[in-house]
Length: 543
Image (cartoon, rainbow, N blue to C red):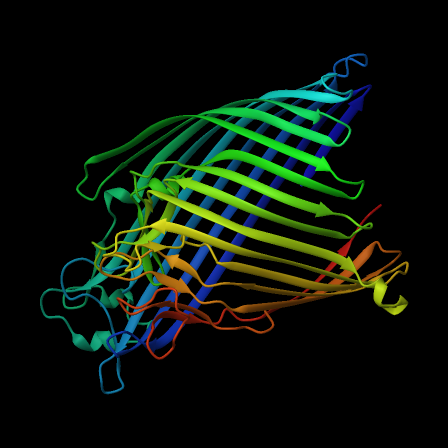
């Protein structure tokens, strides 16, 4: 990280740079019994190299000390480079006599999960620029503002992948080779007639290039209509085009070329009841756009979820209308109580679903016709000094939401004719208790709790019911101690202390989908413990 800034008079120019590079290596060994009742051993050996380069040049200028007109501008560039030099997957199954046999196809094409090696290259450049002009006006009251500006961004991505695997030789295959352990089975001497054959499984859809261009302009008014009533109102106009070039598995050209023009209004009205309390009413329209990965026909096998994930070139953008009514009270420094009610209407929301046509378990993307969501939310942050001086260093905070979402579906898919939105929980609960000593080198203890209601993990279809994620409790603890006149700090983090099991399940077809998880009747897709994590860190600030 390297940041530079230069100021003169009423002007400032800054250059911010960040370079991040990560090497990640992961080996997963999975043993168990599959849906047919057969024992298996599966492994995934994963290597990932990724880097991010980001540079921003910004300027802030007061154009006139009389008119107080301000100009802010920015130019930015970023590069994402992602390489998977090798993702090796393997499976052994129990032959019935306690001997593990490698699952290498005896005919047809190689399969990525059975002795496959996947590699990929992704490179993306992003170029952007913005300019914002702030003009003080005396409409209604002094010190109000008109703001207008522009934002543009161009992204260019190139992606390619390769799939290589093994199949059994068509003639004279030696079945004893299937009994060899993973570190011996694909030795070079076994790649021969009568042994294994390397098979290229790369498809035309495993390569694509894509680009997008966003041009947006906005104008808004922000100021007080009366001494207590503040209004922010404006509109944003966006032109967005997205292109992608690839081929399907029959080597026919596949092109995506879409352009959208959107006018997105917003309004925010705040009334200050007192110096510490206010009421807010806001409304806006926003859009949701598919990422390159979501529209690319490329299919990828996700070992962790044991599914193939692929894009949908026909995805459309979604549009959301938002309305929010809220109350906020700030009784003292560092304390707050807020409550709000909200409503959202989604036109063509993007969701992930089970593909009914695919062999095996595959996830894809689609546009639901429409959806609605409404709910209430409350948040409290309060120091505990009112319980006595001995509690003055404690702070309690909590927030909770109740949310009702609904997507209409055919009764052949869901007997009720409706379901919640994919990924949307009916409730969220967060709570925390923090202790911080009031000393030159303060000690701190923070305990955090989180729980979400059951939510649809992947949308089902006529053949397969929705897959739900069951609720689980998450408890985190952090201990910290500052020293060296608070310049240095050591932190101990203990994450997911309870390590509750994550369960992804389906209700039997025709069963009540809103009923709680029943381990005796529901079909468990994945039951996983992510594990607790303990980390220790040390930081020092040079002043």
